[in-house]
Length: 118
Image (cartoon, rainbow, N blue to C red; front, top):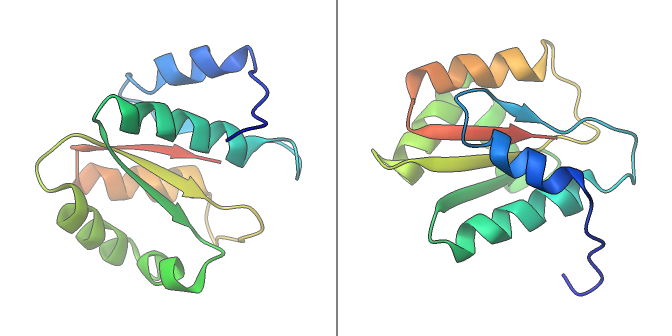
């Protein structure tokens, strides 16, 4: 990320990831949500944390969002029993239900994963 512009809210968002709540970045298109998310993911990766970035707009990732069971099974396979951070890029994807509630219920099945959605 060569042209990354540091934003004041990055520290606040990063600190919130340590809570048991879901962190969600919401804003208009092209506001930098994905850039912030990937910057934070990169920082976690550098610290040796286990992270996963899924982009719902990618066909090869969308299969994990066919049902909550599909996502939970993949999270269990990917994270196992270790703590991990899940980053979901959901720009332009229309869920039948609120994304926050949908992912929150998935994480009820895998308490070892932590989600950050945009």
